[in-house]
Length: 311
Image (cartoon, rainbow, N blue to C red; front, side):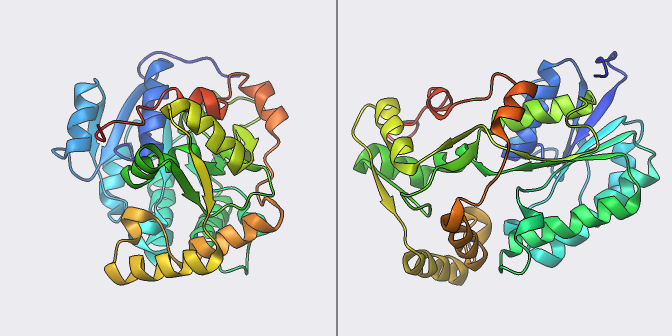
């Protein structure tokens, strides 16, 4: 595995003011890399927080290839992530191709892209937010870039938005679209950051490979039981059936809030696929050999202030 070099070994992280990019920025900085955070708005709240944490900022927009080329100058690595929910299928695909073009033009040594698990197993199922990632994966392969593709499953961190936490803490109710029958794989955002750092270190089990990532497999009832211990009150699990998901997705679409809630018909189709056989298929034991400190759900829950803003 490649040793970390000095601070001239620069990684530019896209989406750094979001959760995935933010986790990667923090891990890379902790591991001794020189990091620059790509942001569209250097004066936004997210960018200001990164600046206070000692992270260099660089302005760039995934819809502007020239700005990306400027941002990537001198970088030995780039971490890329795109967002279907905020931008839609066509725009996400365009942004992914822009990333590839800019990385290629700047002769970046290593491109690490965060896709999503199972893209190769879900084509034709109407899971549009997977299909765009699959097309970007293909474009990366066609480009000849020196690239690693990380494929995280459902993030544990998806459960900590204010809407989730209010239901969990105040009503003792955790609602989600996974049924009670299966163990579903989840991943902590922090673990994505670790795997991204290891990929930039050219870990032989990750380097230039597509790798599905998960931290643990757990039933939703067990997840809710662990939530009870974390928040200090009983929490019961409520399975959102497909008709319930469709109604919620319909109203979110009408309100134009898909970007905020990351919900809609594509997610309904994903949950249907998940509920057939569990869906995800990361080799967790092999991942533990790479990263022994994978976060179990109860450990991850202890890192969250569940009552923040609710007291």
